[in-house]
Amino acid sequence: MLLTASKRLMIVLTVVLPALLAAAPSYPAEAQARASLAGQLLIATPAMRDPRFEQAVILMVRHDATGALGIVINKPAGERPMAALREALGEKDSGSTGTIRLFAGGPVQPVAGFVLHSTDYHRPATVDIDGRVAMTSDLQILRDIAAGTGPMKSLVAFGYAGWGPGQLENELAHNVWYTAPADPGLVFDDDRDKLWEHATARRTQDL
Image 1 (cartoon, rainbow, N blue to C red):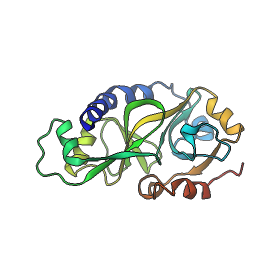
Image 2 (image 1 turned 45 degrees about the vertical axis):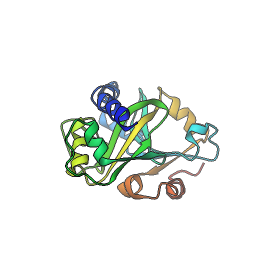
Image 3 (image 1 turned 60 degrees about the vertical axis):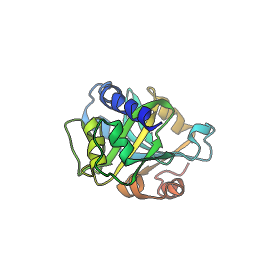
C-alpha cells in the first residue's frame, strides 16, 4: 500500500541514507578521482548470472576504498497517485493530479528510499553526485515534488545495490559489468525498456 511505503520512505530518508553516505572515511581528492566510479553508470553484461541484476543499469552514487553504493534506474516498481503521496506525508491535498513512479533501486534494504534528482534543487542534505545529478535525504523533497515545487527531474527508488571493499573491482575483473558515462537524459528521461540497450551502446570498456 502507498501509505505504508511512503511512511517507510519518510523514515529511511532521514535515518538510513545519511548513515550510508557518512560511513566512508575521507580520502584525498586525487586518489578518489583515479578510482571512483561515482557518477557513472554500471551496466550488467551478458555474463551477469545474478537474476536480480539481469540487464540492470545502475547509477553509482559512491565508490571508494570502503565499498560502493548505487541505485538501479531501469526497474520500475509501479506508479502511485500524487494525491495519495501528499496524504501519506500528512498534508492536506488540494486537488493534486498525476502520479509518481517508483523504482526498485536494488536488493539491499528494499524499504530504504532514495531520491535522485536534477541539480536545480538543493537542500542542506543534498549530495552532489557528479554536478548534473544529485541525491537528497530530506523529507521536504517529497513534499516539494508532491506540491510541484521540487526538482525538474526526479527518480524515487526503494533499495540499493551495495558492494564491500574490493567486491565491485572483483566483479569488473570477471566481466559482469560495463561502465559508461551517465547524463541526466539517461537517468531521468530515457525509455526504461530500452535503457539497458542505450547505456550499453555508450560503454567505455569492451569486455
